[in-house]
Image 1 (cartoon, rainbow, N blue to C red):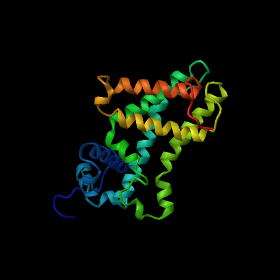
Image 2: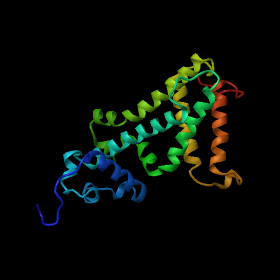
Image 3: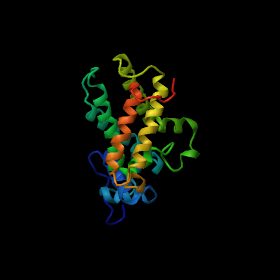
Image 4: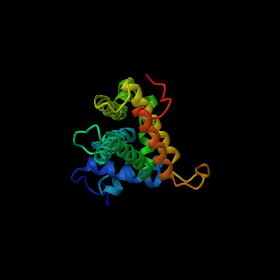
Length: 219
């Protein structure tokens, strides 16, 4: 081992590397991320990360998986994990939607990476099976949205319709809110991004419950 190079010895190095990667993505961007640089930050040999991730793309896939897991956890915590009731469904779902937007605002680099198909920069060159597996975390999030809408339908709070299609619409809307309200904009006419997000979230809930005239046209 070259002089000065740290030995491979660390508690949960895989988890530590993911945390370091997330920090680097937020501060320096994905393009400047490297396994060698992360090894130095973790205090291990430059070969140690390859024991857990064969490539940068493999690491980014795990970062995306962890990102979606944290997003789902934040949504669940905000909306409450206990069984929903008819009277509180709308308020609790709006809290979850608000948490989604806040997550995107708090972790812009991670959130952006999470919405790159296949996550890794070289994903387009991977076998189809690997690319599909890399997109699994996003699919799980979409299914979670659909399940929440199904609960709302059973409670009589969500209008009739295909919950899978509705979930796509909701996700696209939340993504749009998160993107548009990441910064102040002249079009907001002096309103804060948070205030604009609240207004649009109110419209989203109203559309889901059928209280917004015209609805969305989804069936």
